Length: 379
Ligand SMILES: Nc1ncnc2c1ncn2[C@@H]1O[C@H](COP(=O)(O)OP(=O)(O)OP(=O)(O)O)[C@@H](O)[C@H]1O
Ligand SMILES: [Mg+2]
Image (cartoon, rainbow, N blue to C red; front, side, top):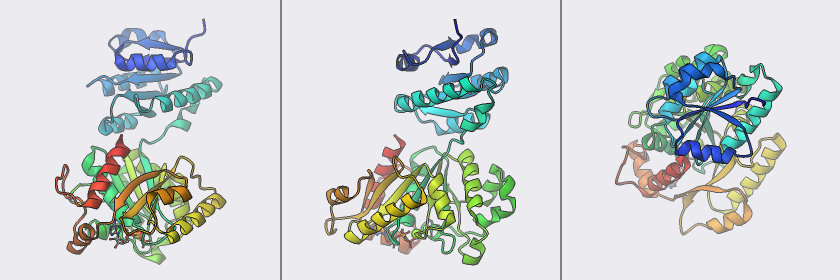
C-alpha cells in the first residue's frame, strides 16, 4: 500500500475527531501519539506534519519533529487564538497555523495545495515557497482625503493591542506628512528611514531598534520621516522587504496610507492581506470609491475577498444610509464607526488616544464601535 504523506501528531481528542472527519475521503493520513514519538517517528517518512495543540507540549514536540524529520513542513492546529504560541512556533520554523473549527475549510484547502506540491517535488525543497511569516498586513486606504484613515488605523491598532495578546505594529506610510504619531501622542526621534541602510539584510532586531512604543498599550510604531525629499529614499523594494520582515516579527501590521497612489502605496496595497477602505456616507465619497475601484483594476490590485469597507462618521444626519451604500458598492462592510465629535475632539485636543486601558468601561461611541470591530475581526 502506498504510504500516506500526511502525518497527524496529537492526542485522539475532540480536535482530532473533528479534523479526521473533515479529511475523510479527502486525504489519507498516518497518526502518532506524541508520547510515543521517540520510538515511532523513525518508522515513518511523511511529507507534511499536522501538529495538534496539547497544552504545554507544543514547542517541545515541534522542536523534536524539526530535529528528527529534518525540514519536513509542520502545520500547527489549535482550538483558539494563542498569538504568543503561534509566534513562537513560526519562529521555531512551523510554516503555518490554523484555528479550528473556524479555519477548517482553509486548512483543508491549504493541505490539498501543499500535498499536491509535495507530490511533485518529493525532495521537500518546496518548503520555502509556502513558508510565510505569521503576521497579517491590514492596509487602511481611501481615495478621499480626510475620511478617517489615520484616526481609525491608529485607533484600530491600539485597540487590537489592548484587546489581545497579539504583537501589533503600526506603520505610517504617509511619508511626506506623517500624522499617526500625533494621534498616538508619541514624540520620536527615530523613523522608518533609519532602516534604509540595512534594508537589504534587515532583521527583526534592526526593526525593533527603530520602532517606538505607544506608551499606554505598548503597541509598536514605525513613524514617517515627514519629509518629502527624504521620503524618496523609500522605494517599492524597501516597502516589500520591510513588510516581509514585519510579518515574521508581528502578528498584525497596520499600515496607514496616503491618498496619492505612488509606487509605495501601490506596493503596500498589493502586499496587504486586507484593505480597509474608509469612507464617509455621502455621494462624493461613493464617486471617489468608484474611481478608486477602477484605478485598482487598472493597476492590478486585487480587491475580491480583500477589500472591506469601513463606514466612518456614521450618524443620522448623513446623506446616505448603510443600505444606500450597499446598493452602490458590493464589498462587505467590516465596521461602522459613529460620528463622535465630542469624544474624538476632546481626545485630540488633550493629546490623548481613544483608548487608555485594557478592559476600559467608559468608552466614547467611536471607541466602542472600534472595540466591537476589533473583537469581531479577532474571531
Ligand atoms: N468618527 C469620527 N467622528 C468624528 N470625527 C472624526 C471621525 N473620524 C475622523 N474624524 C475627524 O476627521 C478628521 C480627519 O481624519 P483623519 O486625519 O483620520 O483622516 P485621513 O483620511 O487620515 O486624512 P488624510 O487624507 O489627510 O490623511 C480628523 O480631524 C478626525 O478627528
Ligand atoms: Mg491620514
